[in-house]
Length: 544
Image (tube, rainbow, N blue to C red; front, side, top):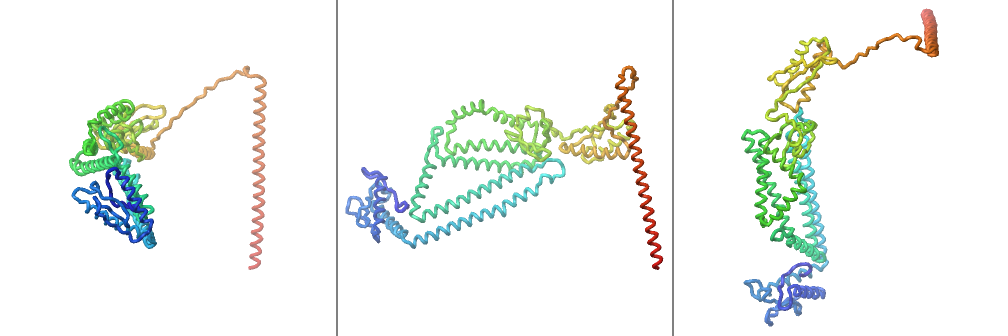
């Protein structure tokens, strides 16, 4: 090596190892450059048994048969090393001059500026194209843009779109990092003071990446091997997703199957391809699957002990996928949580509530608890709307109003027709039940609200009262014998009664006096104003 540059490789020779020979040759080169004798002369001495390379008439290194590759002679190898040394020494001498340092600094500044421009342009791509694209996608699908209460079915697509944006952002960050790594690496190669350090770092990284240190089965693998495996598995998952997406959008959509069947079929194909592809990737990677029998046994014990919850959710997911008690797009009620099923995976199920909130539920919850599926086999369901009217109301008019109100609603089915049942005589009202049929279970709350508004309006027009609960309390009077009251109590009550009567009389007299005083003041004010106006009129006439 010379100033951090690798010139050529040597092999062992007799009692000298290759490392020792290279170390002595490097020391000779450093001493020759430090002496500063210019020009440096490189010659080949062929008077010995093997060619000897001489620098400035000093012994440098002998070219042995171990140094010569197959198909090449000793003289040819010596001549190649001589040419390499001449070029390297001339370059090393030039790199010690001030002109080279100025040139290298200018190049380093230019490289840093170029790296900065490229990094800035990548940021511009994100700010101008990708980020506005994500905001435009959100604005074009606002959570309240749907006039109905049906949860948006574009949520998986939005999630996929967001995942793609995040992937692009990570890719841009990686590209930025690579740009700066290459820039700094190139700059470090310009100066011999940093060149050797960068070579050491690169060599350490290479050794760390390619050294087999992880035993697996009968073989050992390096960090680079695991990076390759991760890359292969990532490519496999990406490819299977693309195949599943194409299968769903191009083939299954053309068959006329409903959304739930399409999603289930695409999901099964996706996991099947991942399973088979993983086996193929592991075989191509060089892993003997027969060596994983012990690992499989340990994994089985782990599933039986520590991974019971995951195994339970996995089995529940398979039951939901194949038995299909619930499907994507169904409107369900799970322990009071109502919403539309958006996604079913092997571990969990995603439900979008009426408030446009995504709730992730473990699959076992659908098998362990009571689930109401409003869309199972058919989305048609019946609503019960209780209505109470006051006693004495015209019941035929009530019946007609309820039937007409239900038939005039656009979301209520005409067949089966709405029905009204007189349920019972309540404490404060006559109770009826209006039964209607709908085919949009997710809109049941809106339908009920619309009906109640219309029924209240019609009842007000017809004078039909909707009562509120009330209770009449009757007090039964009884004669209290006088002898049961003590004389003190009778005297106290008499005194209190007289005092109250005097206070009321005094109060009334006081208020009467106040009213008379106000009337007298008002009369005086009126007379005074009339007198002033009369005098003003007389003065005006005299002036005329």
